[in-house]
Amino acid sequence: MSEEIVDIKKQIVNKIENKDFVIYFYAPSINSPSGGMSVLFKQARILKDSGLNVKILFEPRVDNRASQQASMKVQKQVFIYEKFNPTWMGIDFSDIPLLPQIGPDESGNPTTKIRYVDSKDDESISVVNINPEDFVIIPEGCSNIMSQLANSGCKKIVFAQSWIYILNSLQSGQTWESFGIKDCMSISDTITQYIKSIMPNVKIKQYSQSIDRELFSVPEKISKKYPMVGYHASRGGENKMQTINVIKNFQSWYPHYKWVRFVELSGLSKKEYAERLQECSIFLCTDQIAGWGSSAPESMATGTAVVGWSAPGSTEYINAENGFWATNGDIFQLSEYLGIAIDKLLNGELDNSDIQASYEKTLSRYTVDGEKESVLKIYEEYINERIHEINTL
Picture 1 (tube, rainbow, N blue to C red):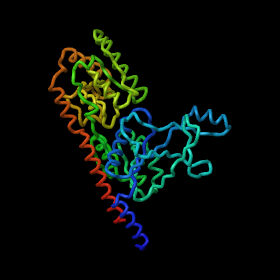
Picture 2 (cartoon, rainbow, N blue to C red):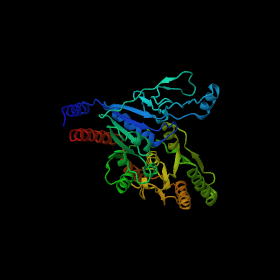
Picture 3 (cartoon, rainbow, N blue to C red):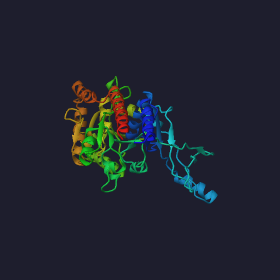
Picture 4 (cartoon, rainbow, N blue to C red):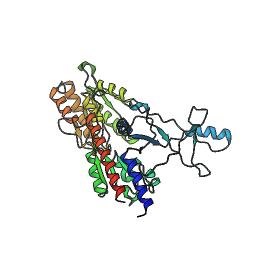
């Protein structure tokens, strides 16, 4: 081995040991409430607070209408982008750089300017150079990013929050190892077991995300709760149709309960969502593909009973004592369980301290301190493993 290579290895190791590196997170530029985005930014916040250098990369979304209007004015293709500012999360990211990433310009040179909607002037874009000492965290569905970084010498780690997007984002026969990726973080038992079954050589580290009990808490007065069922159907048109069908089945089969109110909890900030959830007596959970599913534990934390499908991602916490769980995807059974739950609610059977105690037992695994401790431990392991990896190259 030449002295030059030995010297380069020493430089990289020294930078890692001295925490002189950047942890880049790739984030979808979603401006509407998303549980996965909250978890990603929360992890970034934990690492930033621990003194690490964290930056978030994102591909801004094109505003098609504004782009068309601008292009017509100058008679050439112009792209106008939406501003990425996910303040709905309630997580302070003011000291974490958000760096837009756009492909090269017409000449093949790096794009250095961007124009946002409602902005008269272009803004500068930082050209990001990812170095061997850096870490890049890639969401499980972003195979395009994996491909772009396939030949990069940085440490690449997949952050898996959903099982369904893993293979759907890959070509047949591809795995993460096709892009030189050997490490993954998982946030649930289901995701971990699934990855082991399809990519047995990938090294997995798992932690449990948390439920903020200062935000999601049982109201002091039971009178704050109404005979109201909260729900949200954010998985597309089919999920919306199924959810509405469950509600209408219930109303047809239990006509004497037609006065029970249903309210869609969508488009809300995290704080607003928690406040509305506190007012609900029941939450209808119809997410079949969540990798973990925060809606049910958040409901339990506010003393709100859960009626939902026993989705694969929820199996680590669901049991007979903490909800009314129907077979995943069975609309008729879920409609029936909703009726049973409302019967028990109005008969006073859900106003029981033993029920909240079962919720608290479930929630004991998902604490803020536990999540922070686990995240920091995982990254300390990654840092030590990376040093060993460089030394043994």
